[in-house]
Length: 192
Figure: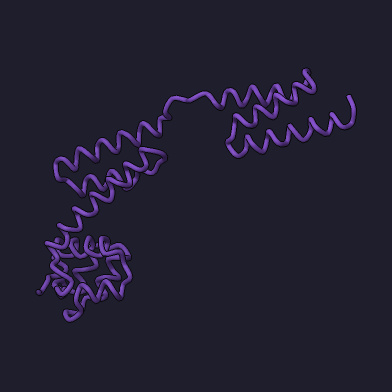
């Protein structure tokens, strides 16, 4: 075999690997088949083609994908029962890929919008003013997460919810969710 043919084979093997790495399996196989035209006994090209053939065969859905589908189905059932908090709890841990991921993200947005409407109905509009209801020592028994503690630190009986959102920089959904929790635990009360 001439030096030129060896160079061509080396180049085609590398080209095939580049295509394979870019997930262009068909183009990788074509490059390696060209190697076999030049050197029918090339074991490296045969191994690469065999591996690529196995990779290109569709695989059954993974257990993880089936689990994501199950989580989505459970969340949708909760939505049908108008248990949006429960649905969001299911969806928060459902990371994923492809169509299931898009469905999960769309469902999360649906649930968040419905919950935000409930939170706003409970908390009031942006002009509402939260006031402390519980004393300092009573608050310590609640073990508040950092975001809730920060939002609570803004409660002075004069600052409106809208101003609290502006100062905190928090996502409105998260802020209204925390304020609802503070209302539910009777740490704060709201004035219109």
